[in-house]
Image 1: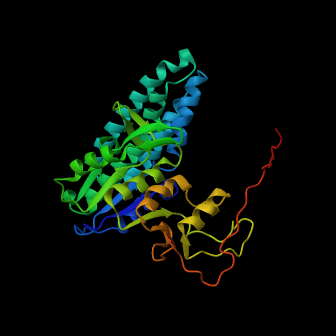
Image 2 (image 1 turned 45 degrees about the vertical axis):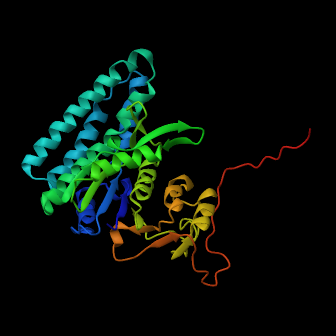
Length: 324
C-alpha cells in the first residue's frame, strides 16, 4: 500500500466548517490509505492547562470546564447526528469528571504529578480524533474509517533529547493493530503515547506534529503533509516584510536552518523521522486546498536564488566565553 500521512493542527480545527473542509480532502481508496493525525480543537489544550493552573492555585474552574464543553458542543451539533451527539457528550462528560477527580488532590498538595498532567493534557486529542472519526463515518461508509489511539502502539522513553520513540517495539505494535484492517481512512490521536510501563505520556509541545512524522516513518509513507492556515513557507515574516512570497521547494537542511533561527516552519526534531527515510514533507493550506504549497525534501531546485528566505530572532543576546 502507498500510505499518505496528513497532520491537521489546532489552527485548522476551530469549528465545524473546518472539519467539513478536512473531510472533503479525502475519498476512500484502499490502495492509497490516508493516516490523518489530529491535534485538539483550537484552544482546548490551553483550556486544559488552565484547569491545572487553577487547581494548583486552589481557584474555581467552573467557567473553564464550561468553555471546554461548549467548544465541543458547538462543533458536534453541526457535524454529527443526534445519536452520535448523545454518545459523544456522554464520553465528554465522563472524561471531564475524570479530570475533576485527578485535580481534586492537586488543591491540597499545590502541584500535579507528571503522569496526571500528561493524562489531562491528552484528552483534547482524544476528543478531537473521536469527533472527526464519527463525522467521517457519517459521510462515507463507516467500515472505511478507523479510529487509531496512539497509546495502543507508540511506546516512548525519556532521554536527554526529550521523549523519543522505541522504534522496533512501536513498529511491531502498529503492524499488529493494522494487520487485519481494510480501511482507507485512519484518524489518529496526535501528541499522546505511552511509556515502557504502559502509562500514558505526551510528546511535549508541538507533539502532534512529531506524532505525524513518527507515523510517516513507521508506515514508510510516500508523503507527509502538514495542513495549516498558510499557503506554505514564506520567504520572510509577512508582518515585517509584506512582499514575502511562498518558497516552492526547500531541502531538509534549508528548512532546518530557517527553523533554527526563528522561522515558523516545523521544529527540526519534528522533521527528523521523515528525514530518516527521505519522505517528502509538504506544507499546505486547508483553506486554499488547490494550492500545492511548499515541499521539503532531500534536495531542492536552486531556482537561481542566492537567498531563499530571511529570518531572525529578536530579544536575544550573544555571549562569548573564553579563558582558562
